[in-house]
Length: 205
Image (cartoon, rainbow, N blue to C red):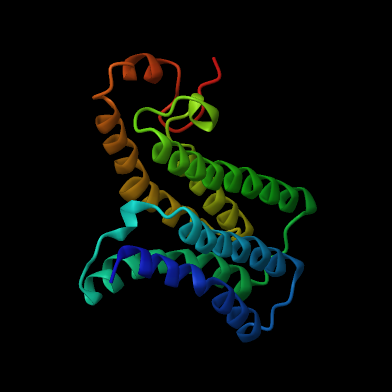
């Protein structure tokens, strides 16, 4: 099975898992419903993205035990946020909820629009992508994912989900950024592009 299968399975289980947590902890608060709406819609958008413009990186095939142990289980760490939110009956101030929704929205924009731009641009012409979302950051999709999961962690109002986001960023996103920069360095105009763009955060000066 491919890595994509295990990632898609994780996304497909988000809504059932959160619904079970809501039922199990008798939690129907506004906060948990907002979490279900945000993470659930993000998961459904991921499945649509993989159907319409899939990421070739996730086509790697592994034995079932490897995929389950090294792809699905680490991803299941993201279920910690809704578990803590549901179990602890978290109540958040309205400004915090508003900030979480805004952070999530910007994250979805950078993630999915960035992936779409990369997919369709490279299908039309190989080479550096230096315009659109990539004009100021070389990894808008990674930036978007970090923002999304940071929003989920904020809803949980607990340190553990932030640790998980940090571990994932260090173990997956950072190596991806470094690997991509090394790959892009073969293009003659990469140095100029690097000077005017950030590796992750957009360069605005």
